[in-house]
Amino acid sequence: MENFFTILGGMGTLATESFIHTLNQRTEAHRDQDYLNYIVVNHATIPDRTAYIKDSSLENPELKLIDDIKLQSRLAPKFFVIPCNTAHYYFSELEKATEIPILHMPRIAVEAIATHYPEAKRVAVLATEGTILTGVYREELKAHGYEAVSPSDVLQEKVNRLIYQEVKENKNLNFELYHEILSDVASEMDCEVTILGCTELSVLYDAYDLTKEFNIIDAQAETIHRTLVMMGKKDLEDDK
Image 1 (cartoon, one colour):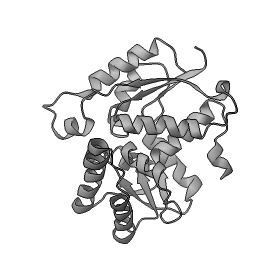
Image 2 (cartoon, one colour; image 1 turned 180 degrees about the vertical axis):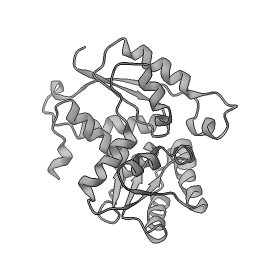
Image 3 (cartoon, helix red, strand yellow; image 1 turned 120 degrees about the horizontal axis):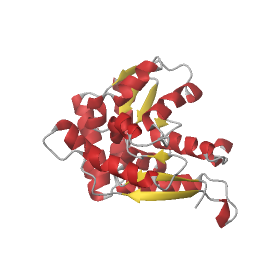
Image 4 (cartoon, helix red, strand yellow; image 1 turned 120 degrees about the vertical axis):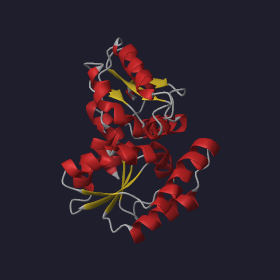
C-alpha cells in the first residue's frame, strides 16, 4: 500500500473509533477509492497512561508505544497519528524511535486557537489528570502566548467521572454531565476558549454540537483536519 498513514490507537478504543469515523465523514469522497489509505493499530492493552503518571511503580506504557512505533515504521507510513492526548507525554521519546513524523495533537489544538478565536488569552484545558499533571498543554499554551487554566479539584473530578466511568467504562455519552462541565468552565474559569484535551471528550464533542454555546477547540477534530491537509484532501468541515 502506498500513500498511507498509521493511527496508533486503542487508548481508548471508543476514542479511536470516533477518530476514524469522523475522519471518514469529513473526507470528500464519491467512491471507495476517494477515501484515505491508513492502518489502524488498536493496541487496547497498552497500560493506562494516567495511572502510570500518578504511580510510577505501575507498568510504563512508553515501552509498548515505542515498540509499536518501531514495528509500524518498517511499513513506511507518511506519518503517525496518536489519538490519545495523555500519550503525548512520551512524545519526545517516540520521536527518537523513528524518522517518520508524528503529529502532535496538543500542539495542533493550541495552534488552532489563533484561527478560531484570535482574541483569546486565557484557555481552559479539560483532560485526564495525567495530561494536566504532565503539563503537556500548559507548555504548548505558554509557548504560543496563552495562559493555561486548569480545573478546580471539584471540576476535575467531574471530568474524571465523564472520561472513565461514563465513556470508557459504560460507553455512556452523558450529555447532562458534559454540558454541566462546560457550563462550570464558563461560569468559574474566566476563559475565552475551552480545549477538549482528551479523546473521550472528543467522542462527546462529535455526538453533541455545543460550539454555538461554548467556545470549544477539540484536539481530535483539529488533528483530523491536519491529517486531511497532509494527505492532500479537502476537509468537508471547511464548507460549514
